[in-house]
Amino acid sequence: MKNHPQQLDLARLADYLEDHLPGIEGPIVAEKFSGGQSNPTFLLHARSGRYVLRRQPPGMLLKSAHAVDREFRMLSALTGTAVPVAQPYHLCEDREVIGSMFYVMSFEEGRIFWNPALPEVPRLDRASCYEAMLVAMAALHDIDVNAAGLGDFGRPGNYFERQIGIWTKQYRAAETERLSAMEALIEWLPTACPPERGQTGLLHGDFRIDNVMFESGNHRVKAILDWELSTLGDPLADLAYFCMCLRLPSDGYITGLAGQDRTALGVPQEDQLVARYCELRGIGPIQNWHFYLAFSFFRLAAIAQGVRQRALMGNASSTEALRAGAMAGSLAEEAVRLIDACH
Image 1 (cartoon, rainbow, N blue to C red):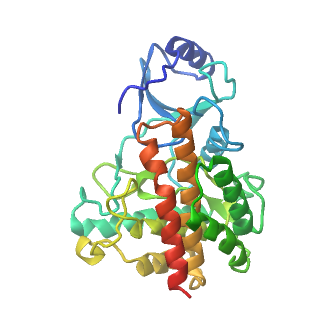
Image 2: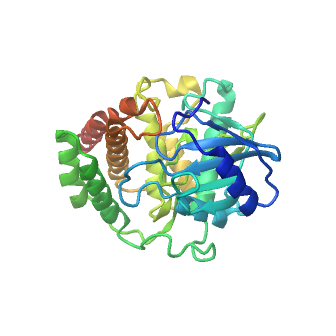
């Protein structure tokens, strides 16, 4: 963690939280977590303990982006279920308090891994970590959305068709230069959507290893983090996005396992992960897998372009934002190569 260059009014924040969050006692000291590109996240040290605050970034924002209120609603719905999450405490929609909407949740102790090769974990235990992540993902996708009170959390049906349209618009709104690979994807993806499978579930939207916290000392998942992109949709979108790490470059801003010997690492192969997920959820083999992967690369490329635009505007969360934003072109190119290989 490091100090945040955009100062919070900690005295005002402490007064507000003491009035709205039972049990918290100031004064408050805040440290910004260094990871992440989207919603700035802070560790709050108070006399009563430690808490986590997530806020919208300051400045002009793309429509529907940085929806911390949706994060808070999702966490509230999942509390007490088989899906491991931090405990949500309070949502503040009054932007006058710290300059943007925010919420406060519990601080969870645990381990976060940034490299899917899991160098910190003994080789023989790495498959157990992947198993734990698949179990947590399957538990999320098995949630009854209506029983959880989230039946209106997203629109039912035509998930990929709608998402392609949404991310195309987001990409256009953040576009800083013409990327031929993105143009090819914008043309191909709408024509390649698989038939509707009739399965609508809760999606995390950014399910990757660094958004999963493990318990200290074992390989169980303590909490799934960063719910900003959560919605209703086809669960295969989360699975493909998770498996995308196997195809990302090992020296990229988001570390992947492309070109590495996964057997030597003790990391499951992509077909093993997909088969195990299907087993956990009791579903048959997945058709059109290349489409789901290509869509995942396209969406991450659109997200990276948004990070790049915010960096150029000067209101990105991380000092590494320009490096992250530079991924957009290479991600789109990988998706095009994947499509070409399947034809």
